[in-house]
Amino acid sequence: MATPSAPSEPRVAHYLYAHRAVPRAFLRNPPAIIGILGSEDGPEFLAGMWDVMHEALEPHERVQNTAVDLQCFALERDIFVALVTMPPVTRPLEAYFVACAARFEGPGAPFARAFTLDAATTPGDPDDTGILEWSAEGERTLIDPRCPPDGSAFVDTLEAYLLEEHG
Image (cartoon, rainbow, N blue to C red; front, side):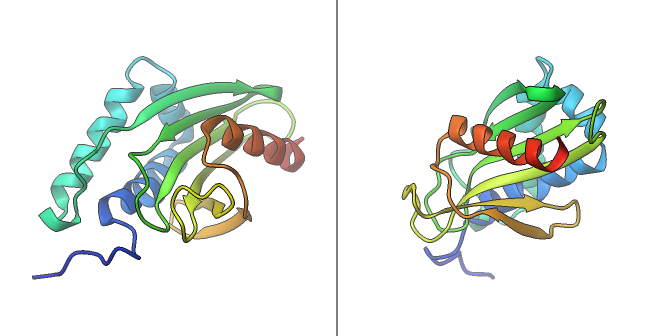
């Protein structure tokens, strides 16, 4: 039998949902997932994803609080962002937020990109975070090492980054 994660490691369910399940689903079919997340069915869809993933894990890999929140934003130049607020971060490398960003028409389109804002080593420290971009294969790239663990600040930082990248 496997042992639970040490407090210095992210909780398995929290990490897998934010860094694998949501980015992978979105990046494999951006128009469909953006359509779902932007609809009234978005919260139920995310809860269902969590339930399916959670059931596949060993009991010690699960987390007690599985509630996620969803907000959608229409940014400048027709960039759409679905922001998933994760359950509270308690360990390093857990994500405060997952952002699915896409533009389907216009300059620099189409694009679909998935990001997380993670606690680096000290959960809750606004100076100890990192913005990571995720591929559908689970590979990550550090984008920006600092952003307060605040949804609005994260979306604003992503908007500036995406406008610089995609015009």
